Length: 362
Image (tube, rainbow, N blue to C red):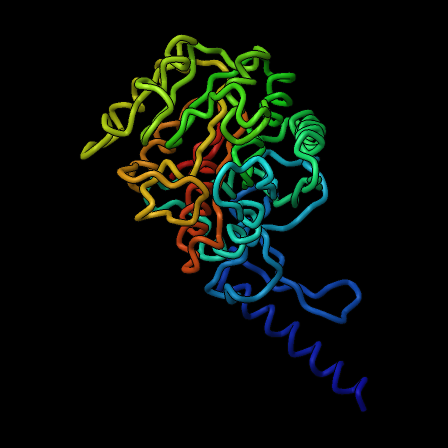
């Protein structure tokens, strides 16, 4: 009796799939080879090459399925990918409020709201790039230096495939080992650093590795092309009258938050694109660059920050650059029970995907 019911159910499913595919050309329902369960198989009929396409919420509920970034397929490595979302769940480099180790998980949860096209720019990343979520780096939550080693080794494998990593942090310590791996492949890179803090401290509480030191370490190791570094959104109280003297001495362009108040940042980004030129560029975006009124879920909030609109302007202003990696760090979900900070982070990561080289625009 059960077998008869199953055959009827499978027949109905196949019939439903046939009728459904005519209504939804970008999403088709197919039967698994073992004929025991149904699965969504995204496809692109407008392209000769298959791409990973998130299932549309028109046909699959956002609350369904396993949490991956934007509901993309998960795979174990970056092989065959043009870009990959990857999490680095640490907060052992944090100097104030913890919780960023939960950032990647919550960004993935909130990313279920994302759709496949960018309505503002008409970017179609899933029609031009093979993208997947490749999970998290297996960090050591008890040993920050060992975690940096693990991150560096994981990213060496990612960038060796030619894949561009889009990283969900995690505290900002992670930028240091990521840039070690990126610079091994590309040489010294330009850096667009969006943050409330310069993160160029030397030694903090006797330690040289932490979320306040990554870019000092990167300069010391020759990972950055210092004439092509810009820091945007810096603000807050400091340990000296000029907290950004060291950055300027290295040749960095420093754009303090006060220079951004009440302004569009599109003109600034036109200048930044000229500064970056044709060389490789890494984009590092600390969510605390945004005012805590918009993104309270972070470890070291500073008042009077950027707006989400300005954050989007900065990222969209990177279009045309040779981006070789991006990160979105310091989302600390325990300090924002609404989920809005993680949701903002997910949207900013999608904007980063949309400005990668070779993305198609309508």
